[in-house]
Length: 257
Picture 1: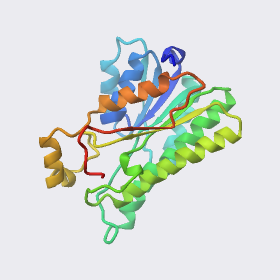
Picture 2: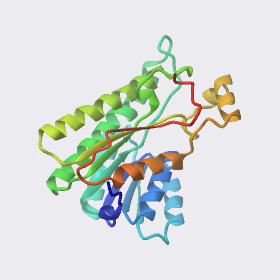
Picture 3: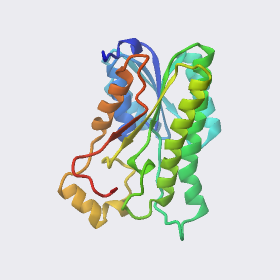
Picture 4: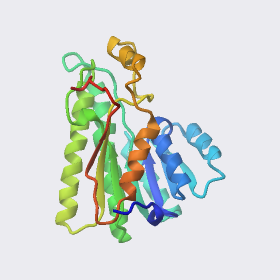
């Protein structure tokens, strides 16, 4: 199998939740690979800062302020991309959130926030990208940044609804693969499931637990670039090869076992 990113050079990629962490690292690498990268996030100032850091690269970053929990903002972002950049070839659904909350005492508002971003927002962005790919006859690639929490229950407090949302992403990935296959589409779909990554999504409550302190002490944690390396591998596979699920965990991880 020959791995190459050449077919994506100059093409349009969309990355949600790109103002920090994994999303920012993905956007940076795709620009360095020569793509036109539309990045969506609420904090446009951070996107603008990232763009200024990448001005000397062969690709280009296009910041768009959009809240993935709000459908109208997602639709406006995709409308702008279609009108100004051209057909979408890659969508990376990276935006995600976790509001620490138990299942016995959590609020409906907190649960809704998690599901709205992690499941509904992801589904809206996927739908809009697929519509654009179909209209332009593009054999593109949809990538969901999932989690090991999408495959098992974690020994971390107050992440029950987050875990449920990520199990939803796992189900959505397989459902979409089947739907595309039955429709004769050549669009690929991939779920990338990281273990613990040092990003802003980790709340101070989680970081202050004894479990997390031991993780940091023993350096059993990933950094965003570890996930980007996996994403580039997935995108580099030949058109007939689909990596359906890629799980990336730090050596020695036990909190999810």
